[in-house]
Length: 493
Image (spheres, rainbow, N blue to C red):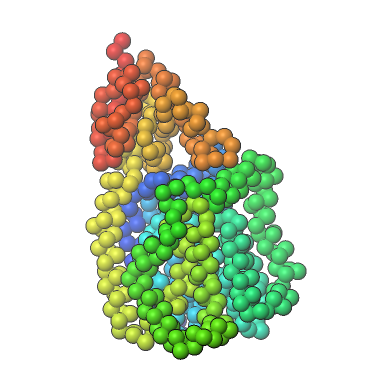
């Protein structure tokens, strides 16, 4: 009877509905470029090589991200085959798990009404729905990163100090998912909170003698192995390029503006972001009479202060980083959802109606936008299917334009990136710079043998300004998709 009652509980119903929402259409959403395809192709090559420790892509070791997400993909491929559903399975699983964890944590610091409201807010936020269906590390990081901070606060605010051990475990898993940021940023948030409470004496209760070795053992199980196997090549690429360089040199300079994360905040929190200005306005109205009392101007209770520091620090930290991505501040949605729920819990009917309409909207968007757009414009799936049908399996296949890793993922063929000869040396990887990402096969135009049959894939935007070097060989178009043109060269003799 207790099991039946649990299945009928509001949380079970809500999580079941979110599971359906996040799984819908996943088997039809093509693997997109440039991010999803890098993850799926890497996991596929690891699986084929029977190597579950060293990420690899295009036959080369690939030190872009730590190992945990690749393990998820490999596990899904072993269970369900190599397809879109399997690729998107674990992001959905971790997103549902995070909603359950949010509910549990919120009941610990507040009550069930606030908890279920927070779950509805987070689960229907635009970024959360989108990343629950996206093949990237962020859904996994979301759970591990926020669990680290949640268990810290539960240990800090109670006599159950054993929660600190969970803090170390999840910090380690976070580090195995995203890198050093998995423990450095939670650590910064904890330090700032302790400073706000003037309570650094709590450090003595944080189980450091056992917690720190526990963290190091979990993290060292992979990082130590990678360094022992690959040495400085691992450190230079993983730490030098994908951590230090990413923080100091913008990968996308046009996005490196001071207002970047402020600008996208209302987009990623749709449809709930409107509550933030209202809450700020209400706080401002309440505190105007006491504005002349600086020492007591901010007198939030510890829980509110922790949630605010949690959310604000994530956004400010990544705003200070040179490279900016829309997903970097994604973990901040966990505390933000609780803060929003505090305002919305007084309006339960509005929350239910908004969540329902938003869920229906996401279903419509899945079938009217996500599936058609990914298949037609953001993936090389159709191009790969044509390449699979080629009768000449020995002919080299070249790609000019924005390289699509989804084509080798879907086709299993080697796709050679071709660039102008004078820029070849500046394109090849070497040193601590962004060229380290160019690990696909690369050649110059003049290296194409005119005496052999070959195929050329070109990105559509480049079809009207083809470099002169390509015209040194006669290419005949044989297929056109919405995002590429495929041509062939057949020697006349």
